[in-house]
Structure formats: structure tokens, C-alpha cells
Image 1: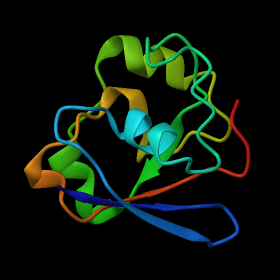
Image 2: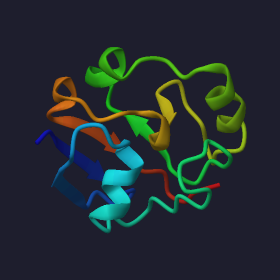
Image 3: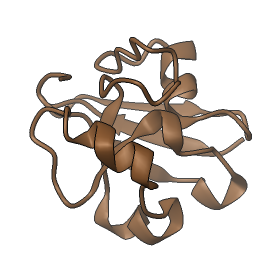
Length: 106
């Protein structure tokens, strides 16, 4: 199983084993990672699973599609490396992925 590290705003790290095929958001919720609210359940209809993808992983996670980009407008403090974790599917190529959480979810 690929390992994903979620880093809270305060620096606390949570490294989990994620099932391939689920989203980065689903893996966080399933493993009770704090800071991923996921109010819409992964439907790309809110921005409460907003994360900052570590620069070394941006190419592998890809760019947001237009719907995701629109929802990122509602995220708290979006940046160039912002993604909605519900839109990133876990694959073996993401083993070691690092994402950082914003101070609060929008």
C-alpha cells in the first residue's frame, strides 16, 4: 500500500497506508487524519478537503481539472500547489506523497 504523509498546519505528521484506488481525501477520513473535513463526501462540491501538494509531488498528482479549479476559489488561502484531496486518486506511483493542510478549511 502506498504511504501518504499528511502534515497539519502545526507541523504534526500523520503517515498512513492508503488503499490504491481511493482518493487522498478518503484515505485521510478512513484513518481519522484531522484537518480534512470532507463535507461533500468527495463530490468536488466544496473545498473542505483542500491540501497543499508538496512541490516534489506536483507533477505526479497532476493539475486540477476545471471543476476542481472552480471549487479551489472557495478554499482558504489557495496557492499554486493547492488541490482538493478528493480529486487525487491513490496509485502506487504516489507512494511517499506528502500533503500539507491549511490552517483551516474553507
